[in-house]
Length: 355
Ligand code: SF4
Image (tube, rainbow, N blue to C red; front, side, top):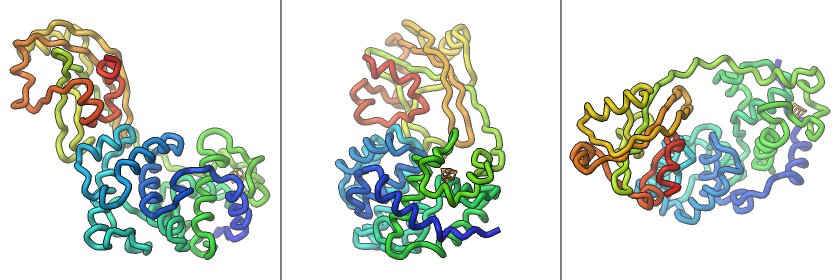
């Protein structure tokens, strides 16, 4: 059954005018700022994004600076946000904008959609917030809020359901305040119609119109099909040290964590005895080997189950961990300032961070 969302529009816009959180990219909705913030906000909460946004915009205040930024610096600015393809696409899009659009984001939903890393949601958000073009921006928050309002048990993981909602919202977009309307749905989802636990219906401006509230089905909506279980990889991570320098190596240009720096690792979770044996087999003489504990990192389709060791080498082992073998020795300052080591390894980063 199709739900007509027209009635919710004035209530949400009015609520948003009093309840919008003050955010830098809202205070100054330059197209570039809206774009960067929306890319950062994919997979990351507003509170966590604020600091990253400030740093990014201070270092790269214009699209040209982003287009020309050296890769190592760009990745460092993104370190901790994860999903590094987002920032690589951001830069590719900035380069297209410099060459094809005279350095300005195009004020056109369809043209935005052709840029790397910009899908329907981001194109809708930039169009409506920065350019006041009346198109919807449908993400997980918006799907949850609208399906609850409609009392709909549609499976929101289905592309057809997202497209249908896009059409439904497109019909009722307010022509004069499209950015505020889209942001009101996002904001309601982030602060009132919460994803985990009970939503705060008593604070909701559209409670009187909400079918899920009246049918007592709030906690059963949205419906999401079961995801496939993630693949699990066991790994032994080594923090290899010699005279206050640490061995790191660059990952392949393609695939998981492409082009980022990583700590050496061995497949499988090895015991202390096994790691001593494995290091001996590699020809390494150690001054000490200390257990660092277990850790887990979750990617979209994969989990790393890790165990870690701090290995301090003797000098005669350096020939095996060298540039010829793809390693780089970096001190604490260089790792903190230059090289981007993804958060998958953060459980073992305290060794150099605390030095
Ligand atoms: Fe969400 Fe509750 Fe508002 Fe319905 S009444 S939209 S479930 S917060």
